Structure formats: structure tokens, C-alpha cells
Length: 102
Image (cartoon, rainbow, N blue to C red):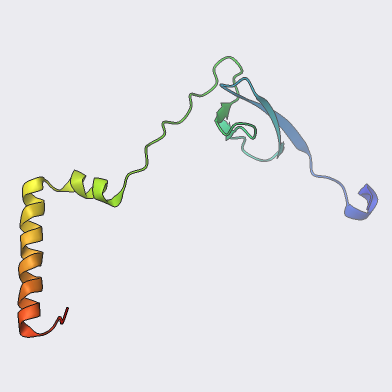
């Protein structure tokens, strides 16, 4: 299909973004669109900015935390012992009453 069949293309603007790895990315936006201050570099994934001299710093990467790590942040060892003792007592009482067979 040619231009005549599809109609006229909307006016566009090319915006250049720069990342800390010296990648230069040209992204095309509509003239009416609000151009974002930063854009993820399509080559390396780091944030890229409009200023070639002052590219935005890489995002701080938080290490993966396990469920246990989050629990340890919320509870002290003493609190954990109390909760564990309560759970064990409840389990033993349910076993004695026949609720739990194993």
C-alpha cells in the first residue's frame, strides 16, 4: 500500500537519547506527544537521557530476597521462637483431639 491508500502520515519528531554506555538511540514520537526525560536504551537496557554529556546513572539493583529474608526483617529471633512454640502447641492439641491423624 502506498501513501495515497493509507492516508497522510501524522507529523513526527525524532528525539535522541544517550545512555552511560555511549549508546545513541533515536526514538520517533508524534509532534503532539509529551517527550519523556528518560528512555530505556534498546541496546543495553540502561536509562538514557536527552543530554549527551550527562547521561542518567544506572538504576540501583536490589538483590533478590527469599521469603525467609523478609520474615527475618520483620521478626526478631525471640518473636519467632514464641510464634513457633504457639504453632507447635496448637498442632499437638489438634493431634490429641484426633483432628490431625499424621
